[in-house]
Length: 480
Length: 98
Ligand SMILES: [Zn+2]
Image (cartoon, rainbow over all chains, first blue to last red; front, side):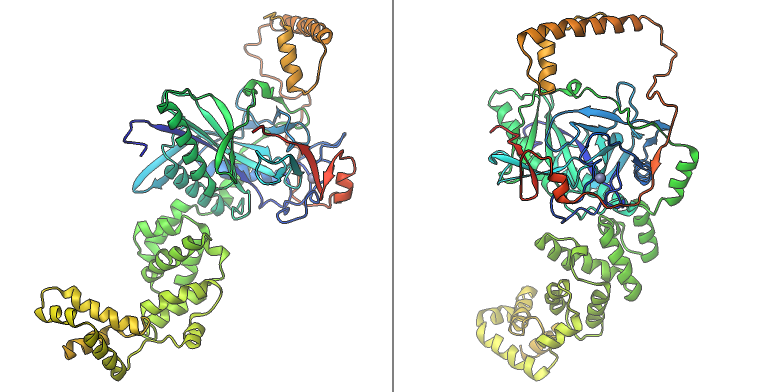
C-alpha cells in the first residue's frame, strides 16, 4: 500500500524503557513495585516535589543504563549530566522533568549505537542517536477518553521511576518494521534483566512520522508495543489523505487516543527551545570510569544474537527456528528447559513455534502469562512418541495445557487415546464407503490420490481425530 | 549579543510559566530582562574557546544512593494539600481541547 503510490514514510522512535527491575525509583527510596497499588500510595516527599526535597541518584540505575548502552553498541560517555526540561503538565510534580540533553553542553549517558533485526525476510539495522536517563512522570486517568474526559485524575505512584529513553535515527520504513525492531529491542532488554516488559506501561513510545518532503509529526503516548503499529498506521493514513487532498502537514505534537483509536492534536505551541533545558543544579555529574565499564562488561549476560548462534550449534536446529524462539526470552528459556527433559530439539521447536504459538497469538498472551510448563510439553511429546496419542489429538490438548493441565490427565479425563481397534475402525471405514459412493468411484479410477486421503479424513472425523492414521489407511485400502 | 527583549517575548515567557501579566508589567519586565541580557553580553565578550563549561559549581562527582527501599507516605498524607481530590487521585483540569 505504501510502496505503490511512491510515498515513502520515515519513522523514528523514542522508546521509553522503565527500569522496574530496580528495587527503588530513580531519585528516592520508594519501592518500584507500584503496579496494581492504590493510587498515590507509593510515593514520598521527593516524588511529590515538596519544598526542600532533593533527588539522590540510584547507583544501580546508572549500571543498568551502561548495560543497555553497551548491548546496543553505543558509546558510553566518560562524563554525563542531568538537565531540567521545563514544562507544565499535571503528570510532573516539579513542573520540570529531570532528563538528559545532547545540546547546550549536555551529554547523555550513551551516544550512538545500533540494532540489527529481521523484518520479514529482510535483515535490517537501525541506528540510535542516544540512550539517556530520565524520570517517569505520573500516570493520568480519565473518564473515558483523554479528549472527552472533563477532568484528569493524577496518580503519582509512577512518578520518579527510572526510565531509559532510546532514540533512533529516522530509519524505520513501515509499521511492521517498527514492530520487528521493538520486538528485538524487547528481547535484548529482557536478556539484560533490567526491566520486566510484561508489566503495564513498561515499554512506551513516542514516534516521529513524516512523508518525504513533508513536515514531521510527533505522536506521543503510545503505551505498548501492541499499540505502536496501530498508532503508526492511523497517523500514516491521516497524513497521506491530507497530502493527497492537497493539504499541508503541520509540524505538531499529537496524542494517541487508545480508546478512540485516533491521534489528536495537542495544540501546544511549545517548541524545543521552550523547554528551556539547563543543567540540573541538584545533581552532580556522573563520571563513568574504566572500573564501572569493566564491571558492566563482566555482568553482561548472553544476548539474543549470541543465544541464537549457541542454540543452533547446541541443538542443531535451523537458524530461523532459533531466532523466532529468541524473540522472547521467556520462550527461549522455555525451549531450553523442555529440551533438557525431552531430547528431540526439533520436535520441541516445531511445537512451540507451531501450535503453542498459534494458540498464544489467538489469546493475545505471552508464554510466561500461561500455566504451560516444560514438564507438560515434554510429557505430551513423549505420549506422541510412544504412540499413546496422535499428533492430531495432541493439538487438541494444547489449550488445556496452557491452563495448567497435564496432558496425561487430559488423555485420561477425555478418553482421547489413539484408536487402534481394527474391528471398530473397519466398521467406521465401511460406513464411510457407503456414505461416499462418488468419492469411492473416483478412488477406484485411481487418478487422484487425494480422494483416498479424503476417505481417511472422514474416518478421522468420526473418531474426532483419534484414529490411528496408518491403520486406517491399511483398512481402507483392503476394503476398496 | 545585546539582543533586546520585547513585550511579545515577555508575554510568551509568561505563558510558559502560566502566569498573567498586566500591560504595565510586560513593559517593565521587558526593560529589566533586556538589561540583564545586556549585562551578560559583557561576559560573552570574553574568549572562552578553550574553557570547559562549568556544569556544576560544586567539585563533586558520583553522589549515589544504594538501591534499597524505604516506606513512603500514606495516601492521606500525600493528598493532604491537594486543592481537589477524588477517590485517591489528585484532580486536574482538562488537558486536551477537542
Ligand atoms: Zn519517592
